[in-house]
Image (cartoon, rainbow, N blue to C red; front, side):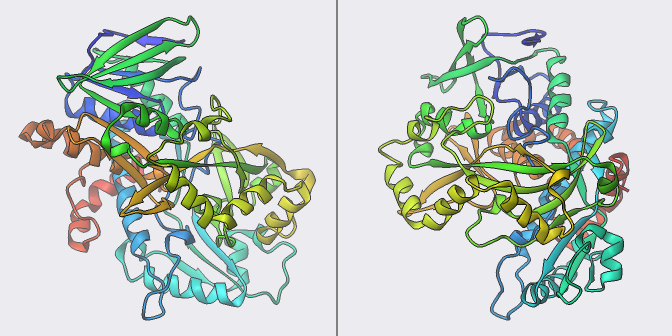
Length: 503
């Protein structure tokens, strides 16, 4: 079905570009905040959530800072691991869990298991230096109430219970260690997005459409946006004039943001990184590995290439995933991208930033090229660092999604945005866009909350708006990193976790 529409209008209040988890979350949250808002969504692909939100285009980790060692990469002045970033991400992920709980209670999603399941999160290291790091990380993290339940062990018998494949064929003299929290998740962000967009398309005053590409954005004298759209099936061209536009097109966001002409987009660039996974669906292996296991980032690898061996649950089927393997690409989108995407994004205002990033990140460029040229035997060698007993016949290589790492210029210093998602909003608060990478989809509700607070402050400021937002995200205005405030929210959060089948 190309289009679902109840009351499509030439002048919607909100026009969403893209059907991934960010756009759909914003659409659902805004309708919850103000049910009178007219919302339209346009997706260029033939199906919804086919890019970065697609189930096999990402690891499906509910990033909460539990197992991702890249979120705690440095040691402070006292020689201990700095865990501030992990605490921040855990806080943000709590907002996502609360919002998902609301979607279930509101009937937007009938069965939570179609998109989220409980899967323990484990950090795994080998070699004495890494073991010392993980021990320090555990000591620092368990000081915070978010991570009080985190377990640490160097005992192989315990690790064999947690994740037996890690020990199969491993040198018994090699120092190894793990941390584990059972409160981890595996999330199918594509399924989540499709359920929300199906609901949104059925609401009065809303419409959703696939195979419709936004080709241009022009700001009008009254502050509204004229959005030019092409039906890719029929070739028909038309336009909509919207009070607010959200560009949630994943890797395709940067070119559209550049077409908007807003000053806030000046100097921005994008560095695309492709990816691949090794996947195993052999039942006897899948049943032995019931966790997401993250390791240390190798050398020049970008943050999205931190190796991990995961249980994935997609459409009710279990499989193991290892990777990702990064690759050089000039495409911004997996399904509809072109090799000219990167060259076409170069502008006079960002060319020097791109050149500087290229010159100062030559190890990264070499790493990406080397990764793309790897043979299967080399990829299996990396897997064997986690699972020494792995056999090539049990694994197949599939393509992952493309991540466009944002490049921004601050005080003349260009750099790749490795962590977080950049929210770009114009001064009139009439258009917003997202650029960036991990933790991305996991903290989608928190990111969208920031956009709502910025761009829909009037609706949120009313007593009715506050009550409605509290019903969707009870902790939206609470500092959960403060133990006393967190305790006040714990009952509702625990109920939300239970409703999400997370135990």
